[in-house]
Image (cartoon, rainbow, N blue to C red; front, side, top):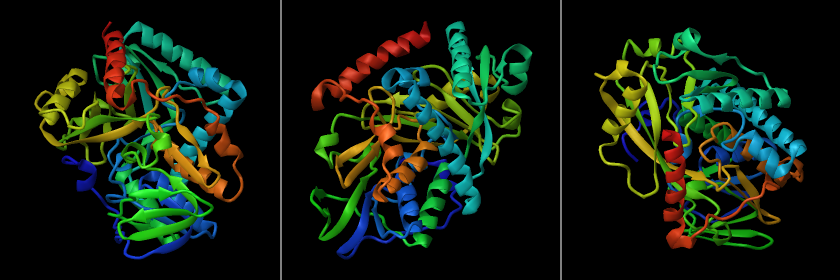
Length: 418
């Protein structure tokens, strides 16, 4: 992990021990991100005995490093999802994505999580083709019965987004932003208080399937009736049946020093993302920094001179930042699927998996944990809506998968530039 602003501004006191004994549990959970701790919280509140295992620290992965943008919908467009599953199922998916945002804010309030929540979001267009796409999005949202924001252009846009780069932006009345690490730790703390047992620095080396699942963690074993796998991009081949369905892709963020002019760049304090395939996304922090994310990497190493490279991208959007100083720069992997839709399912009747949020998971991961808990309780109908989304492995096998993805992505980058 690089120099992470969220770690430096952590406000939730939380600790988890290393596993030091064999344990019998109702449910074992692999992964200490939002999906995992959400499942642990819901299960504990319903009287189950969940045990969560995290290989690093809680919130160490994408849940604690992301851009902090909480949205309804999915990385795949609703138009695409309608083609994949049909209009009836697509409407169910949309409604649950809205529920995910509502659930996020309800948990923040119920558990008094200090994560600086704010509602407000702009989808920004750089070219006429993207303006047409925003208008299509307005029509699709109206068809779904969602609150439809206005399309901002000209002086009205400049008053909301002080950048010469964009020609239009669509208001999103559901989405917003939070401090993601504080939110993740707040959920974990609530789950722990509800009775969930959470262990950090406890990587799972092997899983044995059976009527009771056995997880091997160092010298110790966890035996459970159910297993929920929520390792995302950091699963590292733990379950071979899942290999190839997701691709770990690096994404990066920088934070400037606090600046008095940052509030004026986005006066309404919305989070913003552009419409490019390799997009820029940014927002103000609670202490008036510009948090600016973008770039992607398919190697295991962060790009060189990350802070300077990210600041250059930010200055292209906001020339006002030309003399800004980078205080933090960090990154990590997100788990993307071929169709950019989330990938939920079962490896066995008692083994569930949640993955493939494709950079759009801050709100949805919380609902995913809730849906997994519903399956354990014998109610799988809502989970099954997601499980019916068709998925395919990335082509190329273990050796050629990344080069094939890089080649495909190069086409979309070229399309962004044209």
